[in-house]
Length: 210
Image 1 (cartoon, one colour):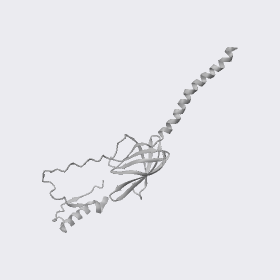
Image 2 (cartoon, one colour):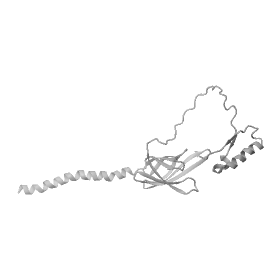
Image 3 (cartoon, rainbow, N blue to C red):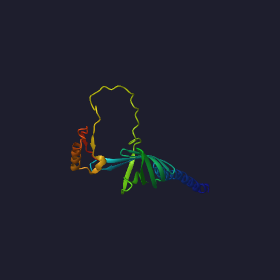
Image 4 (cartoon, rainbow, N blue to C red):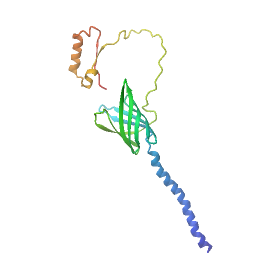
């Protein structure tokens, strides 16, 4: 009778002991997506260009609850995030930088899908929306270079170079990306005929619109 009475209790105790590790594993598995669903990190977009190079964009993001801060670097432009809404399931960012006396802004929208950050932005306010995919990059990659201190004032030996400022004409301000052979030749002829060449304007600089 004792054996029959205690045997079920022994089996039940074994089941309870086996269930504890199983429950712990299930809780950890359920917690992993919650921990992974965080925008914090350095993200990079390498958008291929026709010439074989890449347009590189870095989004160095720091998520604290519903607030997203950090910086966005698009080629040589370096923005600081000033406004944010949402989180990993869908977010919007506005970043700003000083461009001389003007303010330059960019806006990004996106969401986290697995280990990829899918974002959308416009190159210009009137441009089409483009879709980009960013992946995690090592911390510090793409960071703005640290400002170096100016050297102490000291005498420099004359090497005979640039005794006068190099003077000439640059195609960018007038033609931007529409420069062609005929336009450059016309400008060169004009510099000769109006006396600019004799005044020291010796150079024709053709901007490659990089």
